[in-house]
Length: 387
Ligand code: 0PR
Image 1 (cartoon, rainbow, N blue to C red):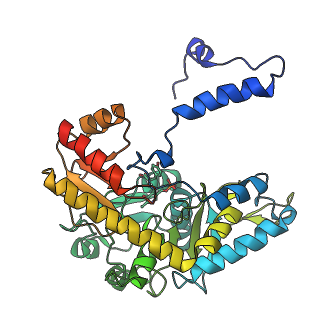
Image 2: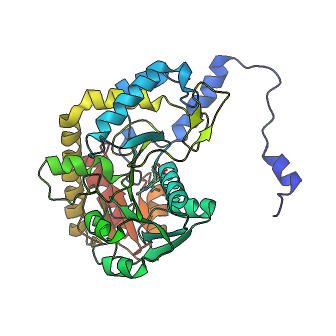
């Protein structure tokens, strides 16, 4: 292990102020730094899975700013709202009978799911599609599990034949994705479950979990992905993505009794099941407010608008000569492009945030609720200029 050069470390340290400063001076600096951050309300962010929270969510967040469900006995009100959030979301994904846990997001949910799979099976091989988010690399590295990536079909979903060949006695878990990071593709979870029998099946629906149920209700023909499929053991979905909750908030549902926990005798709660100890919990009441404010109708409308805008972007990009990598499943769309890094950087110089895909190289757009048709017209024009 190499240590950083001490003189280098020293150069980076800002001195801790000797005396307190005036709040006006503090705020002046804070405001000037905040102005450097990109803002969802600018409409220029096309590369993020998050968006501007509702005003009511911001107000609620502030009220619960000190809330910490790592020590739940002190926060009975937060706990009650958490219980209601878990139940409400369970009803979207047929998880009424499942155990639930608030987590920091898809990453923590995926790590805990694989941890459980390893403990249950005593094995360490993980089969997952090549489209899986990089959080699984972290999970496997921490848990000393062996990832084995399954190829994708031309629709960017996991190849079932190859999966069937790879499943063996060493397999601890199979992972399916409902809404891949790069293309929004949905793996055929029902068919995957037919292959996994008694092998742990985890579904990463971090993004798609708040999209697919509402699109299905609006009449879109999308596959099942959640607990209506008997073989699904656990599923993570993130309110802080398409649930438009303030960060950080993910929800992990599991069919099994909780078998992973640590005793926490000094605290009001006697055991901890998440990776974090102290957990900033203000996003839970803030999300409770969001889902009560929008209701199913509100989410359906919001997501339908995102889909209309996705198809609007698709058409405008085609007119400009860009070819989509695949037809969009949801409000993520990418386009084949040979030099995505250059384009992402040059677009950033013009004030736009877009991201890129690796497989295949391309440009990726997430059409979140803050994106407007006016901004789509503007961004497509700039992309055309820089092509
Ligand atoms: N699973 C999937 C399918 C994801 O797309 C992501 C995140 C995760 C798990 C991990 O979720 P957390 O980062 O919440 O733990 N995908 C986004 C990405 O890496 C995360 C993101 C969010 C990136 C906001 C940028 C941003 O501004 O692209």
